[in-house]
Length: 140
Image (cartoon, rainbow, N blue to C red):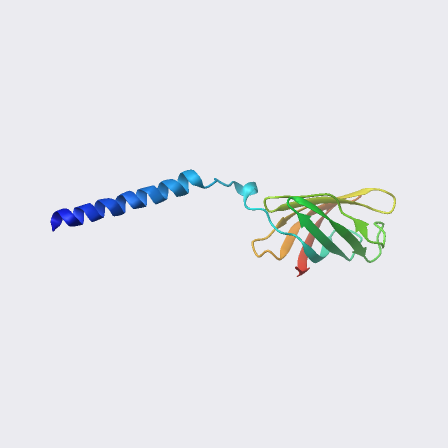
């Protein structure tokens, strides 16, 4: 009986070692910027801290790591009142970067990181000066 139990125990230990080896060798090791890509598709509403606009509306379309769509600024500002196309939109890990052109052709650069809740993007923008931005998902 003792021999039977030691054989079963040996098989269990080998099975566990094999499972650990598959997990360690088979799975990728992800760094802080290499976590699984986020999905930013949908409508977002946002505010900025330290800029003239009172808010923003983003409509984003993601295909793989490429992001297109539109951005519209609200309130009195130099950016312009019409919707602007998103330019050079990219997702890498939990980070989204994009640009848009304001009325005089100046580029608005944005770099935001998605919070773990999947509903919040926070980061920085630069349009004639740097400022903070935060967007909340309005719809998927």
